[in-house]
Image 1 (cartoon, helix red, strand yellow):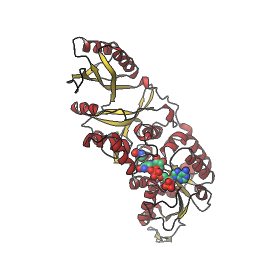
Image 2 (spheres, rainbow, N blue to C red; image 1 turned 180 degrees about the vertical axis):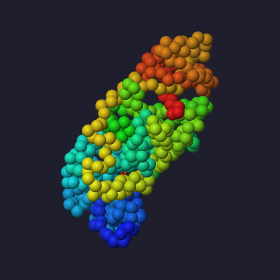
Image 3 (cartoon, protein in one colour; image 1 turned 135 degrees about the horizontal axis):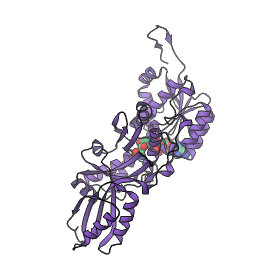
Image 4 (cartoon, protein in one colour; image 1 turned 60 degrees about the horizontal axis):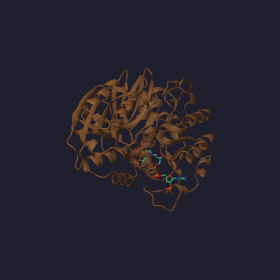
Length: 450
Ligand code: NDP
Ligand code: HSE
């Protein structure tokens, strides 16, 4: 135990160490043990007392770990930790939303504070979990659930709390960004890049969560709640993954001065809130367009501060542990505070969450990149532009490319001005019905993020 000197009085004080139980010793659990052990002295100076991991659980106790478990009691039964009256804080790093929910609710019922990196758990069950935690006067902290090591929850919830947040947009899945970067820079194939992201410990247990936009949807749900003061509503997020991005669209986008990134976007409009996850063309001069590999970045626009950008590692053992450990320290600092005066779980006081509607996708307003394959003869382009005009869609740029190898149809690329998604859906259906247009229209949304 470390003894502290209180500078102003010269009195020595030493508080009882805080005992932590870690559920899960995989990528993030292992990283958390490493960081808490490696930086123990510095952490104790910050927290004002020692923080010790006394117990940890994993399914397979014989498995080799990325951390030393010396001095930690290991068990395959998470309930041993949850029911141990000596443990003050449970750190949930198992993942999934069923068993993890059961464990977290039991920990709360046993008056334990909880730290978790589990975005699925918070996005799907956070409203219920926070209500139970408030009843019991315990904290549930979840900084690591969004954007790995970037302290984005703290930045929005506390640093920007004087602002009305207007919109935010983020690259918030490390695996997806890693895959897109590898495909673009090294011409690697999708499945090969995904396999490497899995080997590096970035991917979810079910990697379709990463590539189909579900993980981004979970994180966006959390960010939107703390930005706009609305309940967590994962079921209302529009999600499109990265599996349909083709190398040819990446190349055409680059020729036009754009990068394709998988963004989570939350925007407050007079009609309601847009919550959407999809591949997005971003002008290549924007900093966020140049965020590559496992790195994440979140742009947040507040009415007072203007645009702010947060950047850092979005996944991985130590980077995520950085956020988990910061939460543990925050909990330790708050142990003696009155629960009524703590920072609210979702940034706004629970009784004042607003019932602002979340818009359905046909009410989104954005610009588009469209690619279609059409017969190379007079009048074809005129038919396409007539359909767009009939739906009040104005074209910003139009380019006809050379036919691809072994193809007779010519690719036509269009960029549009901002339009209503409902009009674009109708226009695309009419264009696809033209006999002179072959196959589907490939549509990617475009944001200038100005
Ligand atoms: P891992 O799969 O690497 O680790 C999960 C751990 O939980 C393992 O130790 C595993 O035991 C244990 N576990 C799994 N299922 C059970 C169960 N049913 N009962 C008891 N123990 C169980 O996952 P990660 O560390 O990657 O992720 C953990 C959480 O952190 C997830 O919610 C994830 O979304 C989130 N997260 C992950 C990040 C990352 O970079 N990987 C970044 C940010 C958040 P065993 O090892 O014996 O199999
Ligand atoms: N699978 C997630 C990602 C982990 O790749 O971003 C971090 O939340």
